[in-house]
Image (tube, rainbow, N blue to C red; front, top):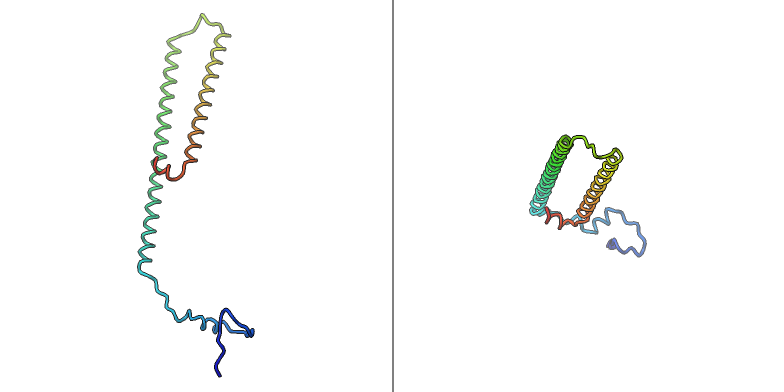
Length: 145
């Protein structure tokens, strides 16, 4: 007697077909899987590219930190010079006899207000710059460095 055909798609009579028979009928076991040699080359090239990209990002981060620290030191030095200059000017000017204490207080209040406004303006400008940098797409960031 000839055994019925075993199909993974059709089973009109509803027979229970064991899995090993279904797999044997599929023919997958007859094929031999081979891996192309170029796959190893591709995976190695991808690994090297990823490693070099990581190194590049790391070096870019180091450079950015270095530049930020330089700018911070430069700003601190500038503030230090301004403070020394202000002390010297105050020492040269000496006590002001022509101004009343009320006028002195008013002058100091105005100076504080101007300084506060200037600091707020600088913070606003920095926030705008940071927002603009965050909104840039990857291509612009790469082009700008």
